[in-house]
Length: 313
Image 1 (cartoon, rainbow, N blue to C red):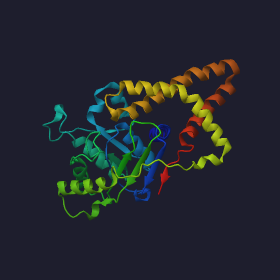
Image 2 (tube, rainbow, N blue to C red):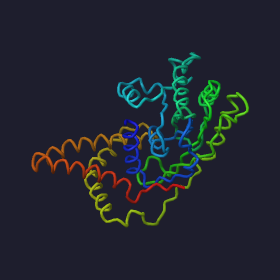
Image 3 (spheres, rainbow, N blue to C red):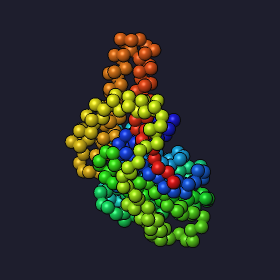
Image 4 (tube, one colour):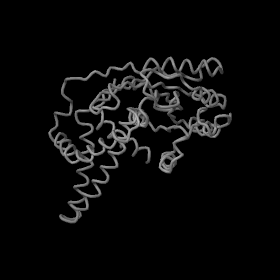
């Protein structure tokens, strides 16, 4: 239930912010069986949102353990069942060789159950226009899972390319590379596997086509959908503009602007609903109030996806 809600909200947020999300190689993601999704990390929380939106199955997310240092972060990790991963650079655990044992065990059990786990092997989000050196954690957990008799594991590389990750109405490319079947991997060399993951991830990262297209969107054919989209844009314009201004003010660097815009946009939208819906309810009655709420949610959805359908191939 939480995953479905997160996927739905992520999709709306992404398609509100970016004008086009082009997805290539979707058929390379196995629909069943254990997979480790290895994704490049250049846009903070937005990268996890893209994974939720693109991968056509439930995904268990991993994140840096320091996310749980705040009350809000700890609550998010608990509600979303996020697996915390400690990095060697984290001072509190820098010299603890067993710092990720419980996290690795949780990932292995998720794989044993046939689940999908998202890992950012670069370890941290960054603004460099190339793949950062990969940490060995993903390779270590893949090899330990195989050693624990978890079969049919595949490592699926997913790379993103942003025309301008901080700018609304720009293009994002998501490319899925050739999976690495762990049953066929020849040895237990962690560094060799890490190099192979890096090679496949480098092929699909920063290499997508993010040039803007001039052709009209497909959704122009349906007048009802266009009307709902117009209503959604009009009713959400003010809270989203406020969220955008606050996001720019709060962001410490360019890599946080889209994340703050989407999260603050969601918060501002919910506040606007809490103001508008009770007013309509009080003035026009319960039925009209509920219909008004439904129109806001429907309008938000179609405003996000109309003329912004993801290109999948």
